[in-house]
Image (cartoon, rainbow, N blue to C red; front, side, top):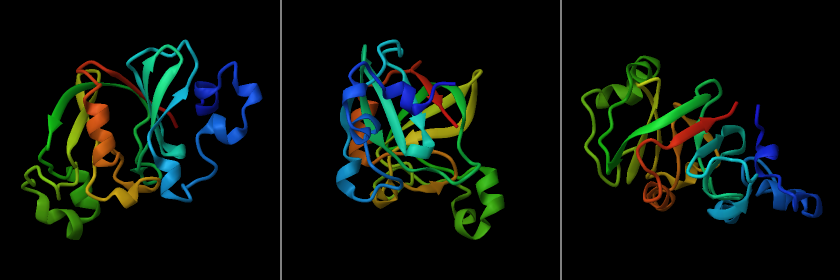
Length: 187
């Protein structure tokens, strides 16, 4: 299995400090400055255009060129609610509407029941400014890479499993991703 360390370690890594190789010093992030999207060196054999998510590091990487990726920091699902494995972006929506899943409503009816009929897209919508819908074997996983109206949640395990980025970051990523983009989420 590819680990985050093996993903971002390059030939230059031996000379770099651990913070430079890993992208940040601790978990969760101790300050907002450590969560700014940035370009990082990655292994040169990682597929260009692919997305790699490391939930325990609250990090998402979009490989933009051989050996180069954009690192975004994200919020992830609470323990046991994260998607693991290979998926594909099959749908992309600007200002998407949102409907909680049946499992979300069952688990927390007081919180989600009132939204069972859905919520239109907009600045207060939980999916934020953009959403990329992840499919596995042609089936919707119900997991998304999406924005959030709650940027303070970045760097935390707070959701039902979706990957949240700030609205600015998700718009940037959305504009560089296409239908068919391969996404790998690691344990």
